[in-house]
Length: 354
Image (cartoon, rainbow, N blue to C red; front, side):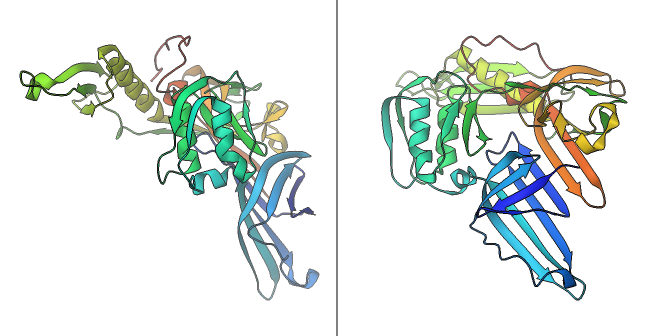
């Protein structure tokens, strides 16, 4: 069984009867919840925990979440005393808090700009490649710190992830899971979700240009690009008007990105996994490391007919006294998380398997 401790305000608490750890590629803060139930006669009352305290969630000696307590619930009855603690990575403050004043930057690199807005929150920034230079950038009134960061880094094909006690700037699919998901070996259960609501047969992008005396109405709507999704079997067009100033090639790239990401996100697989040999006590681990979002994992699912390298988007790890260990890994096609403006040297994808 995993050795789990919560270090809150420097004091370690163990013996938790239920723990859940949530990590997602769609969130820059990892989260957790933990519950401790004790017989009434064994304690004087619930531990005195503060909802603003710093916290570290430690699994087998390694820090998995480094952040703050966000919620504490406690109580008692005639038989027992209980306390439930929820928390999140330090980066949760970047999601909730605004940039307090207008900021402008010129000729600074990506990490320098991001660090300027995260340092007041005590968050260091790490980048797994040489950060690009940014000629001009400015904050917008009322936006949160994360909204500013996301707007900046997406222009360079990057994404932000929680990384220890800091913030990591990386690209989609940079990690590789050392363990494969294989029917009858590491796969215990599978749920496949398919959703057609946000998928369209035709993506039509038009750029609105300024009108003139001899160019108005329809004549002022140019250029235009259109791409189709062969996986959609009925007529479902989507028209987007943009004033981005992109030419036909730029509009086509934008339409292809819209099609590919929507198609990718319309199909998700959630696997309940075991370690090699079906060992549930170590199911949180993909080889020597914990399962984590942004890993590329090989999936050999003979029931669904899959033999693909897919992207891990969500991981939920649970532990309870009654149910033992459990780990659910949600995956999708990497195209679902392609950056809108990919790096110049990125090779064109080969398409979707569904």
